[in-house]
Length: 281
Image 1 (cartoon, helix red, strand yellow):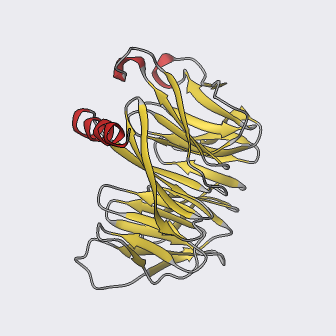
Image 2 (cartoon, helix red, strand yellow):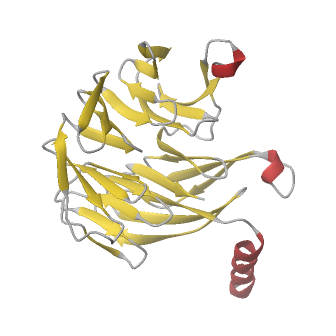
C-alpha cells in the first residue's frame, strides 16, 4: 500500500501540471500541493502563529505576532519588521502592516542592503493585494507613500478591478469613485482581470456580468460543500477556498480534469484557526 501510494504521488508530480498553496493558521504555515483537479499532499512548513501569508514565484512571506517571516527559497527567516497583522508582495517588494498601523516596505530582491522603509500609518491594516491595502479607515494605494482611496471599514481589496470588500458590501472603483455592486457585509474579495469572487454573508460569491457585457454586475452565490464559512480565497489553475477549520476546497474545471467531471474537491488539513491563503501556479 505504501509503495502504491508513493508511486501515485510520483506519477501525479510527473504527469500533471502542479501548483501549490500556502495556508496560514494558528499552528503555522501549511503547504498544499495541487493539480488542476486534485488536492495533493500537504505538510507543515513553518510552525508559528500565522496571521496572514503572501506568495510569489520567488518569495513567501508570513505575518506573525513576533515578526514578518520571509522565505526566498532557502527557508523562513525573520525579516526584522516586528509584529505584523498583514503582509503582501508586489514584484520583489514585500509590504507589511503592524498592529499599531505602521506600514513598511522591503526590497527583497537581494540587490539592496537596505532594510524596511516606512511608508505611512493607517488604522488596522488588514489585507494587501498588489499595491492596494485594505484597512479599517479605508483602502490605500501603497508605494513610496500611502494614497487614500476612501471607503471606510475595508476588510479586503483586489487590485484587479479594483474591488473592495467592506462591512457594507462589495464595491468596485470607477472613475466616479467607489460603486456598490452587492449589499451585505463582505470579508474577502479576489480578482485577476477575468474573474472575481468574494466571501459575503457566509457564502462564496461569483461576479457575473458587467464590464463588456453592458449589463450590471451581479454577485451570485456558489454552492460549496459543507456548512463552514470560507475565510479566504485564491486563484491558481482554478478557484481555491479554505475554511477556518482547515477544510481546503478546489473548484475543478471540466476541461482540466481527467474524467471530464468538474466540481468541488475537498480535503481536511487537520489545522484550526486558519487566517489566510496564498497560491502559486
